[in-house]
Amino acid sequence: MGKQGFRKFQIPTYNRNAVIQLVAANGVGFVAVKLVWITLIIYAVPIPRAHELTFDYIGIANLAVIKERWWTVLSYGWCHRGFWEWLSNMLWLYCFGSVVQSLIGYKQIIPLFVYGIILGGLAFAGVQLIPMALLPVGTLVMGAQAGIMALMAAAITLSPKYRVYLSDYFSIPLMFLAALFVALMLLNTAMNIASITMLLAGAFMGFVYIKILQAGYKPGEWVYRFYDKMDTALTPSEQINKHRNRNAVLQANGSSKVVTSQQKIDQLLDKINQKGYDGLTAEEKELLKKASE
Image (cartoon, rainbow, N blue to C red; front, top):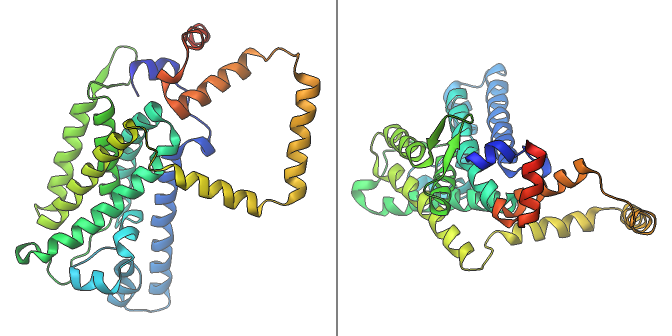
């Protein structure tokens, strides 16, 4: 996070922290597939067959396989081959995702990541129409790299001069971290054309997403609107009425009460998480500054 973020930003709660939600989702995907694979091995399923029944149905492969397993243009981004690959990707996801989340709010993170994964997968498949880019049979690609590339490109597009402050006196330019990440990802592809195209497509999605957002559109808003509708539909009516009654009581009995300092700070931190630091008024920024001293 930036210098202001280091001094003033508090990690938001889980339901308002889309970055942590993505890390958790990727962790669940990694563990679940590994458990299924181990279970198959325990039940004496040959290793090649166990691999086929798990990773082959999730990872994205050559064009012929993609035609049969079309869902892999999305599923490949939620599973990793090994623990260290998952851990390193999640650290990068947290790094770039936290920057984007602090600047434009948590509701843009998951849609941006998913769009990056999907466009990366489609580009991976599409480029294989070129004979020289066709992957050998048996090649399998997994990992969240395309989604992380989208977050990285979004962060740079939003604030290319952003600095990640590890303390009050030491910071790293975001551009340096981005360059390091890209270099590592390229090395990991072994310069394979399809894999490189996947990364470029993810980065392109990140850039386009932010430009669309800056133009006044909200390409990811439908995800949360759909979630809210589903949540409302599945919530028992008595709970809804209870919530409404509680709000009515609070409005009737607490309208004249002064909100405590801590409550006000929590409200401001929630606002930063949703709209970014620049979404605060001058008065709110001053209040947050005094509270952090």
